[in-house]
Length: 218
Image (cartoon, rainbow, N blue to C red; front, side, top):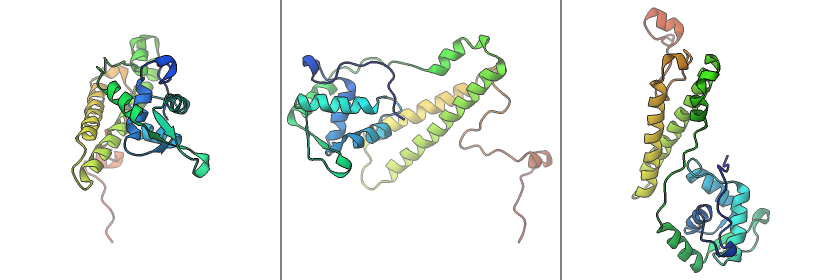
């Protein structure tokens, strides 16, 4: 689910303000084809939702503001009364100007680290449960990025290097986070850590016997 991580500039085009990052990302998606507000929500969630958060209400608010400013043009309502939006020449110019500016530094908001700073005030079992839960989230996310990476590389034609570079960042980041979890002091973590995606737990009985269980002969 896409969610907001904090306030942003007023909607694009309001009071002559420059294009904000959320509005600019919507214009970027509209370069390929007209999309409805709902299509843009889904596209944003799929392509940038893991590193740039926004809400459904933000998408529709920005579209309304950009339509008023002449950056997008609304089409006729189609299925389910949804209006497609197309980027205008003014929208392309505003997007190009936004993209040319320095991106600025990243803003890190990592709730688990905030909890960990004060971890001494939590029971060890509770903190260990938090760490195990979040490790599993990152393990699943890593698998998802690797699957997307493989899908992009196997699509016919030349893979988009910009998409691959973004996915590579995600893969590298999640692997680094998992390595960090694995290096935490043992007193912080519970004995049963969720395995990495590539690890397959051995059945307890088979472990005691020193071999894995095999399927019965037919």
